[in-house]
Image 1 (spheres, rainbow, N blue to C red):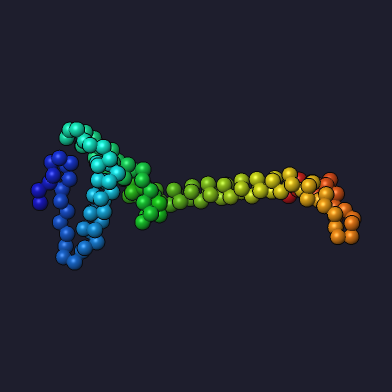
Image 2 (cartoon, one colour):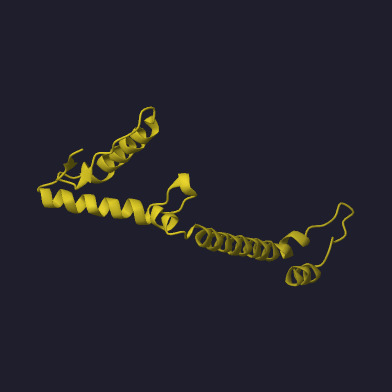
Length: 138
């Protein structure tokens, strides 16, 4: 099949009853047109080529694809999926630990006000000092 010299792309031949391939190609073109080509009128063929090259580089090297585990296709193709997932899990665990620590600090800062309340019998429930000590130990 003849290629399109304007964007240096070849038409993809597809086997009978392989409709999903055509759907993927059509979806790619829709995304390309709506995000790169149409937002600003292209003034020259060189401008269109530059925009196309930038979009293809973004689509393959930086954009995270949900179908392949939110990994860029170039990283997936190069076999870096396990490394990326491990690093992502490490970052998520660190963020979770930070949120727990910050929540604990916030609760400890509220402890003196909470412990100053009286029990129904009128006695103080616990002293702020003991509550602060508990917060520091955690």
